[in-house]
Length: 294
Figure 1 (tube, rainbow, N blue to C red):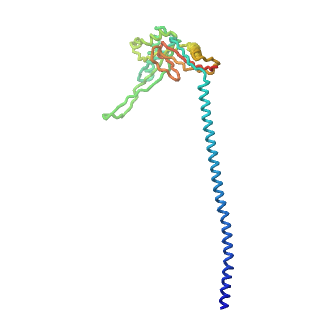
Figure 2 (figure 1 turned 90 degrees about the horizontal axis):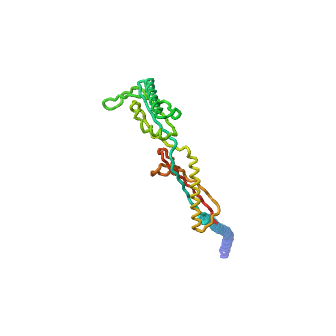
Figure 3 (figure 1 turned 45 degrees about the vertical axis):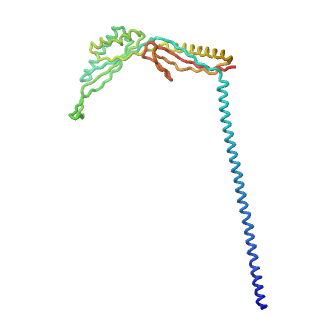
């Protein structure tokens, strides 16, 4: 019995001896784990704080940008509405008559060969020149253009309407003539009456005359001066009516120069209109002035 008790006591002591290191190791492991989890928690908290700071910075920057934009718009609004001064647009117009006429025409001749076609074209040119000279046109006022040649073809078709052949069938020769003169009445009348050429069997095609004005630059300067004065008069009336005192000229803008036919509903173009089909014309221009006020 005494031996059994001693053995039991030794086994218990051995068991206790074995279990103590195991508990110590477990305790150490727990001590090591606790600091790691705590560090992770701290890192997460720090990251959350950083995110909050970044978001706050972004929100602040956006607010600054918005305030800057709104401030700029406010300043622009104040400048345009509060210190723009007085602005007025003046206009001027003038009726005038063209002093230069340009009249063009063309004629043609046909021949089985280029030589025969040219001989006929040359004869028609002589008839046209004689007709113009008889009506007062000088050699300096008329210019004959170069001759162009076009080959004529004859086509053959079958009963179904399909082309089955093409054959040469002579030549057509064309030539143009241009008359430029300061005697507008003379050339205007000639262009309207070419019966003599028709009776002479000349195939003459007459274009509508073009009318120009040789003193256009002087006229334009005159209209600019008148339109500028008209704009200044309007500003003076506005200043007197509002009790403002004019200071200095800020801007002066020249509008589009237009030339239209008289007594017509000609459309005004943004890029300008230059009428050449009418002998009686109207020129107009606008000038925009902007003055600061005291």
